[in-house]
Length: 90
Image (cartoon, rainbow, N blue to C red; front, side, top):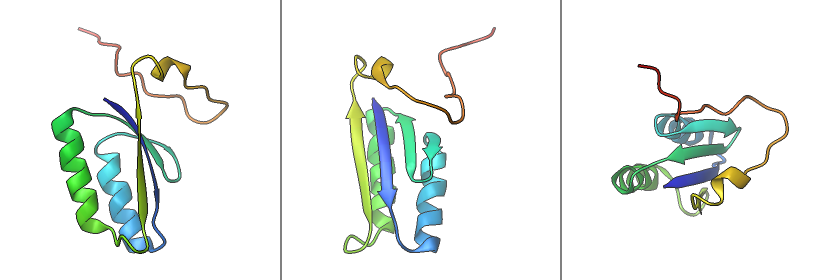
């Protein structure tokens, strides 16, 4: 599944931890936005790890699930080129 994850974490130390975890699961797109291609098991583990770190009264993490039909419709202007994991060299 393809997921866009955004977060709003006011405390620097927690925000850095969240960023490091997300970086191990996906591609950092903007300051508080990641794109991740995950299996159900990976998503469950990621969500669990993030849930243990945040303070629900202060922090917010949003998960936007995009179907395979919607992924090609992502439009962007500027920024770093998106990593293409579909290319394989033998």
